[in-house]
Image (cartoon, rainbow, N blue to C red; front, side, top):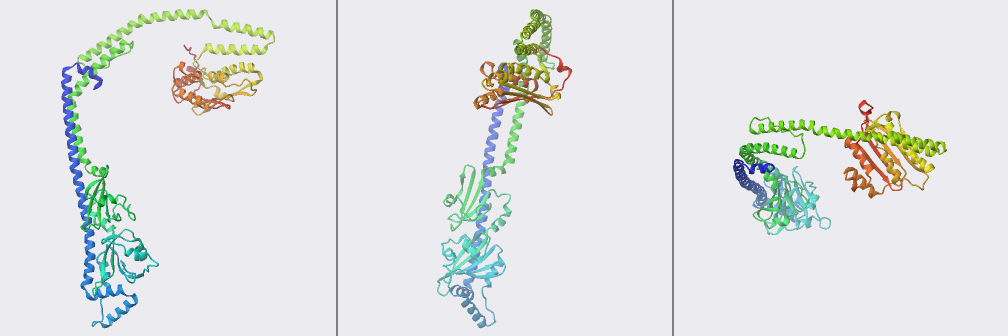
Length: 609
């Protein structure tokens, strides 16, 4: 819309349409934003309330388990015979307990006496119980009941075990299962929480031991299976010191929760960090805390469908608002196309034509513009191009006066004079120079590799004669490879770069080699020397200039850069040259051409310039 602002600003009707669209869009956007914010806030509040209800269910489940233990102990106290049996077990040795039970059995009128099978029945009644433990404070032993309907006495002398110390730790009634106790009773499941209660002698009211009931924490997850659709994040049950009793994510069992200090003193819903909601619920006796940790993104995802519907309706309203504006903008675009074409003509571009097939006024103007440009182009062909052709003919006539054969004949006369005087080395140099000069004047865009290698040989031969036995060169190429077509004058500047910058005048082993090989559809020519080489910093600059061609006056290595630009212009960016060099060890240049076979089109020389 900004692109056509000048055209719209000069059209009163367009201004009205634009203001109407702008006000409508702003109103719709504000309404959508308000609806989005309000609905998202209400939905997130409802979801947080759902998490609080789930936390209450967890609290209710634990309270029921705690009450069941209290009921269990109350039933023991109400049964005098059972209470006496439990007290006797915890006050005396197990051998004395067995003798006591035999006495009770023999004195029983019906031949039976109720023993500790009461606790086995409780295990059968509640599958969530893993173990029931009776601990003797005086004798320091554990009497353990297991789910598979068997019991076991475990001696835990303080000198040989940490269990007595663990049992003497203060407790609020609910705690995590102690590791030392679990090892002593052979319980491998660490996901347990314990409900603890003291056991007193009913005759003396003295403390004789403790009752510990281990519940499976995973049973809480099973109890929450009905909330799977509404449960978000993960739920924790923590003791006041931060010990994990239950973790629905399973990642914090066996270690203190890292943010427990923040939850002990807080209640309700808050934020652990900007991306997380945290809800806490303290139990009635403050002996544990239920925590829910939910990411804001997870809560927001539950409202995404409703929010997406609101956004979609807003977008539809905006699109309907823009329908009248679209016609105005399209009309302004056509006008802008006409004015832009006129500006291009002002800059000298006579190929401009306006593509507009509509039959309204703008279509008629466009067709009239095209007819005018056609007539103007024909006029330029008749008058202006005729004048240019005349100037070219005059220039060609002037160039013909200085025929290159004059220079060839002069060089031949000098060469024959050198032969007659016995200066054969000078004769060879003049012969090679004449050949080079002829190739320069011919200046074909494309040549066979054979011809390009011959130009290089003549150039190198000049310097071999110049430096005599201090310089050698090698050229390797198969006959089939020599017939491939390459860009003219693409190798000689690279060789000249070595002669000017790389050759050691005071060494006798100066060597340069040229090898050409074909790799499927690619021709690779490697030019390698043992010259001075290029230091790393300058090599990096040259490579950067090959990637980003710059103005000739601002860069070095113009020959190398111009060859690379020429190859990429002719064949594409995937071709060109690469340079590797080590200071003092020489330089290796790899030139890549497409493997083009000889054809009639490539044999035709084209004069450059």
